[in-house]
Amino acid sequence: MEGVGMNTGGVIKPGIGEEKPGTCPADVDYPRCEGSTLGMENECGIDKKCQGKKKCCFSGCRRRCLLPLDAKENPCPYHNDTECIHVKPAPFECHEDKQCQGTDRCCNKNCRLQCVPTMKAMATCRMMRRFYTIWLCVAEKPGKCPIPITRCAYPPPPPKCLSDHSCPGNLKCCTPKCGLECTKPVF
Image (tube, rainbow, N blue to C red; front, side):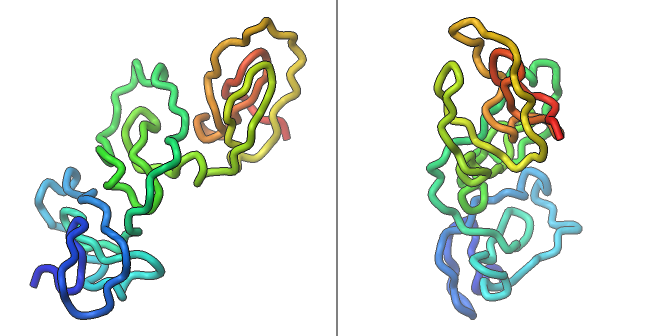
């Protein structure tokens, strides 16, 4: 009874019920379940059982309601690879963009590949000019950046972050001294 009105990895199977538009993401559960469906419950049988734009997709181990693939045009959030030198990475969540729902992309975050919102989806970007020009995305983390009181040499050092999203915990991406770095916010 495989495929009654559902999608398997982007291939549409004919069946009962109305088919929603779009292509399912590629298998995302397979590396985790390694072919065993033990303890993996199906979330759906046909598209109309899924809310909103979500489709009933086969994800390697089970049928799940997932957002169909959208254009993957926006860049991944900034990630500082030097943070990962002494870290044993966790297993990857994805290996390519087509495994990620909607406009999410397969990006390096927290020292492993995972599906994350792109910079444009995360926040509204604006052009910042302070010593040099970069695109800086203002994320939703609370607090304000401290006011810099240091005079800087020109050119400034390379940025250590590009957005609040690239900073751990509640730290914000600010210019506390002479370049962007993850900083404790002021409330």
